[in-house]
Image 1: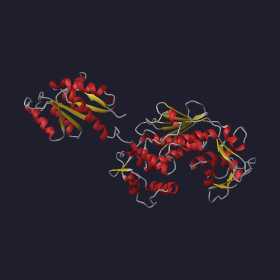
Image 2: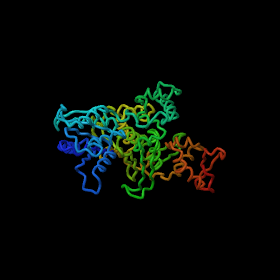
Image 3: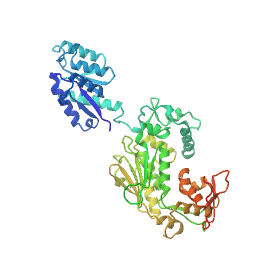
Image 4: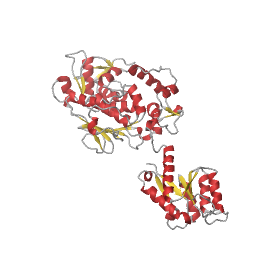
Amino acid sequence: MIRLKVFVSSVQKDMEKERQALKAYLKDDALLCRFFDVFLFEDLPAADRRADAVYLNEVGACDIYVALLGNEYGRADESGLSPTHREFGEATRPGKHRLVFVKGVGDSDRHPKMQALIEEAGAQLIRRRFRSTDELLPSVYASLVEFLAAKQLLRFGHFDAASCPDAAMQDLSEEKIRLFLGIARRARGFPLSEDTEPVHVLEHLNLLKSGQPTNAAVLLFGREPQRFLISSEVKCAHFHGTDVRKPIPSYQVYKGTAFDLVDQAVDFVLSKINLAVGTRERSTQAPVAYEMPPEVVREAIVNAVAHRDYTSNGSVQVMLFSDRLEVWNPGTLPPALTLERLRQPHGSVPGNPLLAESLYLTKYIERMGTGVGDMIERCRSVGLPEPEFSLTDGFVTTIRRKPDQAIKAVTGQATPPVTPPVEVLLRLLESGGEMGNLEIRKRLGLKDRTHLRQRYLDPALTEGFIELTIPDKPNIAACRNIASPRKPAPGL
């Protein structure tokens, strides 16, 4: 969490009560205490340093300078300036955020130099007057909340609709926008043609704010989204047991757009869970079944990416254990939903509506609130327990593993499943004949070439179970006799 230092002007004796009251107020307020630390000169311990050097250094280190100006000017130094006057100048030179509060509605009793300081401040910024501490504290509160909102540390609208600080159009990928257009036109009949200028696409999707890309635009089409939104990555881990324990057999941190994150995380899970491949006894296509429906895995992950709280420093975590899959995201349910209501028909209440809209247009999600119901129904249909949903320090979706369901789905018998990826590949090729890389990934439900090569093709080639049928075009694999392994074939 970001902590901001507030420096409250020093050593005016007639403002001591107000300084102490302001510090106590900010310290005790449930909202402001999360963002601000207050410095008062009186809180400094004794030290072998000049007092003026200390408080000027503190001014230089602060984020906000609050001047509380009363009647007294304070002791002037050799240049004729009081500590408060010097502080104000020190805060002004680097352009720090300054808030000036003047006690009293009249100036007749004020020291002439204090009056001059008030006029100097008034020429540069808006000053507020107060008559009592009870008037001062709400005024400071309102000013600090306005500051937090301007810095986008407080949200009064959806996070994904806010402009992304420091991001510009050149930080978005035109190629990714064009790819989105093609998919959205085919999937949902999106009206814009694929040659539409990127800026017009973003305007149509409400992904620009005053000409600047919004957070949703960066998450969807950014060249490097994590450069601006660090915690938007997805962490995936595979554990052999039922607890989080080191060493972790397999751990990946995925970066990229929201589309990339979903695809990579889904491929991670599908490459690690058990898969059964049947025979062509009843069809020209050999049946393939995972121990957990890929649609359920995908729904859990896309929900975590789409609906998480992006203001949190936490990242989506996908954890595969021996008995379950857990998908955690830093977020919670909207006020209109409860865990019980979530399992029943309900309306769609996206936490990031602009992000969700583009995911809907590419068929990553639906927007009818049917996702959870579909997950429950799909798990029931293959004999799995219903998914579990819980709120801890975030939102957790748990899908139970039942490996024998995969083989039962394709053979009708609950015999031990074919677990090694090489055997799965061989069964697939044995039943389907010669296949290309793309066809194999399609049949196995994989999107990532790397997973296919590392987990399936390379080991099978190394053991001599498959060979490349077109060496000049190493994208076709054909199955050899499983019982007669041969010498290692060239890698892909």
